[in-house]
Structures are given as structure tokens and as C-alpha cells.
Picture 1 (tube, one colour):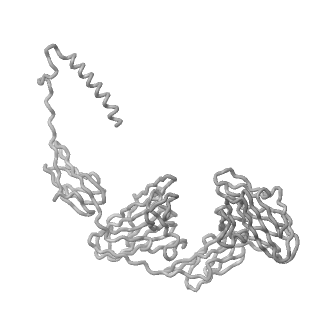
Picture 2 (picture 1 turned 60 degrees about the vertical axis):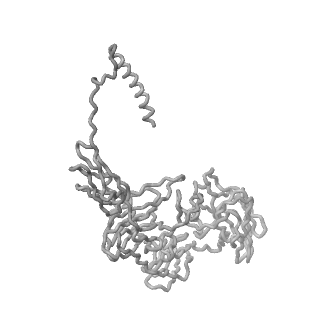
Picture 3 (picture 1 turned 60 degrees about the horizontal axis):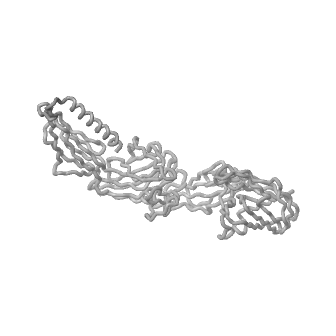
Length: 526
């Protein structure tokens, strides 16, 4: 349209100018239509006509068709050799799905062409990798029976990351499963048979969000031979709120199939690649999945253990020949017998593995060495948090640093509060061996800023404490430091001296207006 707007006025001006010049050149009695003064019409080049044998216009990959031209001595040319090739005789070979134009060229003639469409045949077999592949994780993070962590839910849509919701976008599309969460050393292996040793095309349904050069993050092998993916680049998919996850077909090309086949995907880097299905196109060969071997999951006596800093605890299992891996040796180490040594306060996962079995993870909480005479009252032990009915807007979070986890206290768990209630009352019960005066302190953090203005949490402004029905004076300057963006750091604030009874004591904490995260209340010998 822009060219029309530009060229029409120029054409009109040219016509006016031409008419003026013609008028100036004509003598009286002459007309501008004198045929003797016109140049002869230029000759029109004859056009080559191209036809396909039997009028065929659609080919299946690997199929050929003979083209002919109504002129001898033409040169043949494919408009896209990735879709179809053509030889010197006009024989076309279908290579990959798509549309292509084949030209016949000869000097003195106008080029002739024919359009062809290349399609795939019906798939000989399709394998859902979620259930058909043998899943191996280098650290055991998602290697669980029935899918476990790695089998994620997806739906079709602009950003399919949920089963029935897509980042807040409702959808009525049915949910599907796909495999994601891959790390270095993770593998997916598919085994299948073929009734013939033939060339077959393998097509992978693969998803990604960010752009990636495939060879940098994964390797693919068929029967031990590397599949060439050097030129494969997956583009990013910018969505409404950032990169969106999209799936598409990726052809691995025509590969040599044997009677028994092993297709393996090995990941070379932590990646946001997701695998869905593999389709095999092998003509009239019968292709069948070799079902993954049935595995049992390793059983342990307990999947949650506690240990004191500097002390040990053993992971117990009746399965012989297992190995152990600590996912964070700065928190706890583990030896080849499953003996865990606490290094510092925090939570760590220990993976218990054995070839041919699904691994299991044991969660180990490392607690600080006890201080003589000190009483620790965990924030999550409040009466209101014991049952399923918790005050609105209260969550118990594992302490491990994600939200500013405590290095001051236990590394077990803390109470995160983001409530709309005007007042929250938390009640704690604890035992003391003897009566006396102790120093009360609290470990916690200021509310996260959530994009607003960051501010410290001043205890006396929003927290009131009673011990055994007696008000506890709050310090004038005690505060948790202001958060940094989405992260708040745990800090310990000394409240002051309190009187403790022998036996059971009741600590009541009332929060109003602004709600911190609470880790532990400490009562220390004065």
C-alpha cells in the first residue's frame, strides 16, 4: 500500500508531462497516433511448462517423482533443498515436510515451475517420554516411581505451565505431562524394536522458553552413535509476561534403525529444555516400544532426621549396595555407610541411590549445639499452628536461606506471616526445670517489601508479649533490619529479663498492623 501511495502521483505527473511534450512535438494537421512512428512490439519469451508424473503434487518423505518439461535441455533447480531435492534429469526426492517450488530453466525461455508439498507418513510409533523413558538423575532429585518431581503438568496455551491455569489464564484444554527440570548428567533413555533394518526419521516434540543452542545443553545418541544437532537453535518465545513455554517438532533426520534400538538424551548443563514425545517414521516397518524395566523404590526407616552440629546420625535401610550423596556438604556430609555428620545449622537432602532402583531423599535438619540452661521455643510450635486451621495468611517455611533463612538459630523452619487480619495471637507452651530470671530474645525478620518501601520492623510498635499473664516490656530500640527487595535476613533481638516458673510456662505473642517472620524465642540463663 505504501508503494501505491508513492507511485500513483508520480505516474499521474508523468502522464501530464508526456501529454505536454507530445502536444509540443505535433505539427498542425498531425495526430499523435501515427502508427508509422511506433516501435514494433517486443517479442514475448515462450514459457516452459512443467508436469509431474501421474499429476502427483504431494509426496511423502523419501518418495520420488519424475518431472518433465515441454522443452528439451532444461536445467532443474529446487527452491528449498531442505524440503526436496531435484537431479539433472528432473527426478525429485522428498526430504522433509513443507512446500517447495521446482524450476525448469533454459536460456531464451521464461522459467517454468511446479509446486510440491512434502508430508510425513503416519507415524510407525509414538512414545510418551513421561511413561516410556527410563529416567536417570545424576543427583536423584526427581528419580521417583510414577514420575515424581520431574514429570510436570502442562496445557496448551500461550504459556502452558499449569494443569488448569496458565499463569492466571484459565483454559479448558486437557492437561498433558512432559519432562523437565534437567541437570548436568541427567538422562532419558527410550528403547524400541523395528521389524526391519531400515532408515527411519525420528521426530522429537520438544519445548523451551529461552533461546538455546541445543548441542550446548544436551547430546542425543541412537544405538551409541551421536545424532548431529550442531545446527539446531531453539528460539525464545517472548510471552505477555516474559518468555513463554512452547513445544514444537524437531526432526533428528533419517537414521539407521536396527532390530533393537536405544535412543538416549543426556544433559550437559542445567537447562529449561522439556521433552514430551518421540515419533518414529519407518515406512512399513513395525516399531514397538520396549517397556522400561520395573523398578522398586529404595525404602529407608525414616525420610526425616535431625542431628546436632558436630554429631552424627545414620540413615537406615535394608537395601544392600546403596550409595549416598549430600546435596550440600556445607550443612552435612555423609559417608559410604550412610552416617551423616552435621556441619552447620540448616536443612540438607541426602540422596540414597542404587542402580536399577528409584532413589529416595532423606531430609536432615542440622540443629545448633545446645547451650547450657537455654530454652528454645520454636515459632511454628504455637497452639494456633498445630492443627490444619491456621490463622489467615500464615505459612510455615523451611529455613534454608531462600527467604533470608536464619543463620542465627536452627535451620529447621520459621513462621512467615502476611495477613490481612488486624490482630494475630500466637500461644506457646514450654517447660523449665527451675524457676528464675532469664533473658528473653527473639529471632525473626522484617516483612518483605513486596516492591514497596523497605523498612525495619520495630518490635515495640507491632509486637506485645506476655509470659504467664505478665506483660513483658518491649525494648525501645529493638528491631529486625529492613529487607532487601524480596529477601529478609533473620536477626536476633534481645527483649529483656523475664521471670520463668518451674514446670510449664505460657508465652503469648500478639502481632498487630505489621507482621514479621518468626523463627524462635530464646530464654537464656542470666
